Length: 356
Image (cartoon, rainbow, N blue to C red; front, side):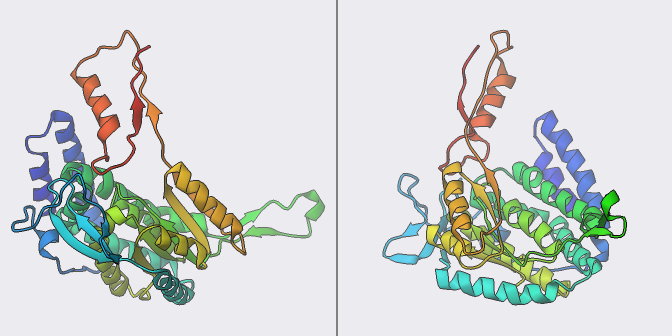
């Protein structure tokens, strides 16, 4: 079924996309075999998660649509940006909700910290198997929440996520084993060893542009290293998190991992502020430079100076030399640089197109 779906996505595509689809078919078929030893997980799907075309839904005005719901600050309005069809609402996680999530995650992490690498690999293989066997739904959900094409979702999100799962399963233990180091001539009577210990509860604040990958990417490394993680998704990708959370919960249960090890919270700035300030042991932030500065300051001001990983975006120039062949290929590159993953309101990756 997965292979048939990908073949359908490739039909009628340009030759380069068609070749990429064939490569994806081979990779996913191989991954399907790799994850076959893991338990199979089934997750019940809603109509919007299951169907390619939705009927009978109200549409929002693209000029005025906003995630904030009038007179209901505890709700997030969700919609499909390609059709503007209403997808309903998702509850906002209050600071108290975030604090509770961190508390549950900490209790789960105390158990998970003692897990073996074999059990951690089992969890990742379980997630891997689910994604490969349910590629169509996983991609559809990402597309419906971000507006991207299914080909972009398969190769920009699913293939990347599966590769990170594969690499961590194959090589993660090697890089987390204790390492002996040279103690130097003055310490011949001593030995030096580096041990890697879980940090505890990781908090991740992620954007909307890769709804699937942005959720699974931070949890792969965090859980394999023995940590719990609480993920704050963008208010523009809140709808898809309800599906991905069900997937994660089912995989945790199937792999024998403690409930609450991975949790997703949704909301606006207050929710993100709470995640940074309510006791997470390490923060990951992916977003703009301006907000990254605020997160960095909040981590620095924390009582224990919270460790922080930043992945910040921005605008880049697209320089065209005067001897360039200005044809369809160049136009495609320019448009891709401006509009790739930019269906929702957000600053483009390419800001200017100077010719030199």
